[in-house]
Image 1 (cartoon, helix red, strand yellow):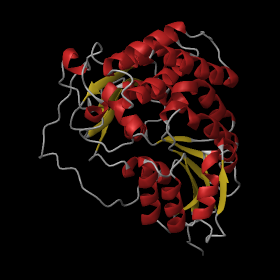
Image 2 (cartoon, one colour; image 1 turned 180 degrees about the vertical axis):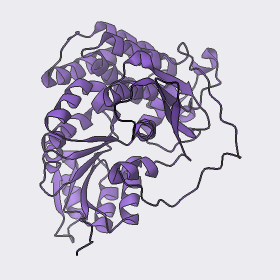
Image 3 (tube, helix red, strand yellow; image 1 turned 90 degrees about the horizontal axis):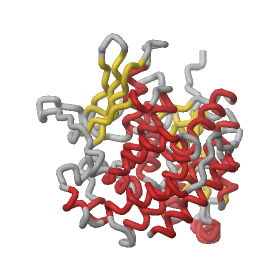
Length: 387
């Protein structure tokens, strides 16, 4: 009898980012189970080439066409690794026959198209790209059901909710308790927040993430995205999703059931755990690293201040209005997030511009995929004009 496990072939969209590099660590620790079939990056070709030399994927893709020659030259002595470039290449590589699962760890709206292609190719989706469900949650859920493509959450909060409902069957969820660290400005007054800089915002107290997501965390827009994601992933309306500010980042999220019982998933802040759980579900594999010591610190929970964190309020508002408005909100946020990092926009101004963009953009009640692309382009234009 052959007990050998068939190695799972993984395509990592965004292998040079925080999630992508930790996913490669999981692959490296479990070489008998997982193999990197394809690695992709947006622009960081040197790092992508380094990863390719180490993990020997069948192919690599750089989304930025202009970087193709540089990447090709860097991997000139690796003839077995095919090199591609461009957004169409991302869409095509996820459909490759050997691919078993696709980790969508790209940041932003750019993750939507390859995720749709992967779903239509019946691949298992390990979802770490927030914007996919924020922008087009209904469309994605319909496609996943139609093409029988499982979506497993990689975000620590959604993984925690998922882990809390495993084994609960059809038991009704009364409330989702979505935790947030509160970011670096949790104790700041509104006046103090007027003058914070991108350098201040990039000092996240517990998680090590990319710049865009770290800023979204500081503004709590990240948590707003997660509320929208939770709505689609777990079929729970917005009013049943409560955000709790939990500075210790130990309770990653919890679920309250109709009998009042609450199940939570706890652990040290280590993104490798939810990544590995998405890869191996329903099995739990050994993971090295720090273990949780509940004697070390108290667990505190606070209500978020919606006046200070307007972005979180805007996310709830976008869900209330529905249609293409979450897509509009996301596009405006991508514009102001970058503008804030470049010093072209104040911290509190981000929420104001997002709100104005949501009010000015064309409303579409039941958007198609083409509508989402058009709404994204229109919202970016409006947001830029407001800067």
